[in-house]
Structures are given as structure tokens and as C-alpha cells.
Length: 63
Picture 1: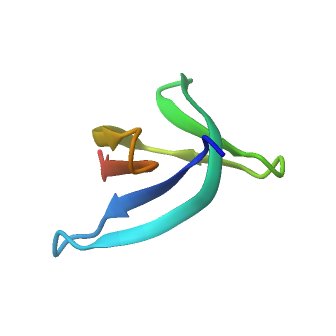
Picture 2: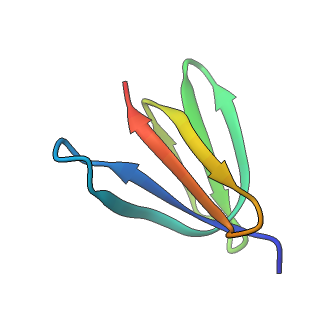
């Protein structure tokens, strides 16, 4: 499977899981839209801090 898990950094710099099974990550209306393989959607005011496709991990940072 090629989907990833998305995490957001909290104010202490710790990673908090936002969504598992992320299939789509795209900018929309000044936010990031995440869509899982199950159709769940989330919109976050965040930017991409890092992505590791081999490790299936996306790290986001609040804006």
C-alpha cells in the first residue's frame, strides 16, 4: 500500500497523528486538504514540514 500517515507538530514539537491512510494531500483555499483511502476529509491551516514516501510519513506544521 502506498498511502501515508499524517502528523502535525504540537507546540512542544511532538508529532500528533492527524490521519492514517492519506491518499490525497493538496492545497485548497489557503489550507491543506487531506483525504484518506476511506474518503475521510480534513482541512488544516498547515504547511508541509517533511515527507518520507519510503516511510509513508507526512509531517505538517501549523501556520
